[in-house]
Amino acid sequence: MGTIKLQNIRTFSYHGCLVEESKIGSDYRVDLEIKADLRKSMETDELADTVDYVQLNKIVVEEMAIRSKLLEHVAQRIVKRIFSELPEVSRIVLSVSKLNPPIGGDVEAVTIQLEEYRT
Image (cartoon, rainbow, N blue to C red; front, side):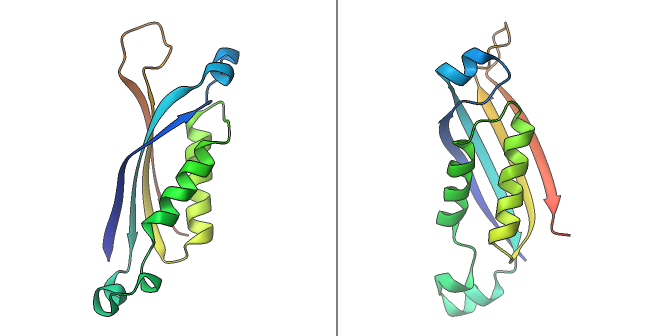
């Protein structure tokens, strides 16, 4: 087994329960960690034999562009899509953070984290 991490994927998205959030948007940070069997790619040195982190980033960016009211909802969409498109992925740890959330206080970020295993 091996681990691939994409750290601090930054997006500007329109998630949130407030109508204003759907109009003005906000900055987000996504951190993704996947587990997969990397032994073949370690031997062959071929992109076709590993999990392409370009594709992982593309999935995150595309799903973050689709509005959700809850961070949990967009995170679950990302997890489902990774498992659907990348059969070699066995485990995902995903954090989605809303930076400077409009919650009436000085809060740097609100983060949800999911850990899912292929069933």
